[in-house]
Length: 102
Image (cartoon, rainbow, N blue to C red; front, side):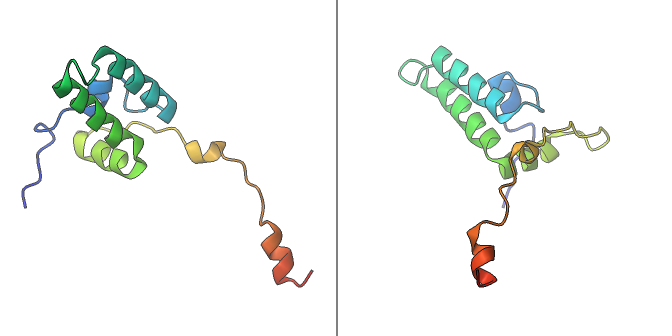
């Protein structure tokens, strides 16, 4: 099985015109902007490159794997925003009271 080298694939961050530490909102905004520039009925090849880059960057696992494979191992990794910290903790919910017999 041949795995393509990092140089064989286009850089998804460069395709969308965002930094490697861009948030999901920034990636989505860049995708929408690029799709307006390259609609599928006019520029199918460029649209597919933009779509593929967005599909890769919107999935956290694929994005992290691509980031690790595309960075020079001697350079530090760019910091990614901690999006989980923005989520609110809602507590255990009613199931805990049901388990305690209340």
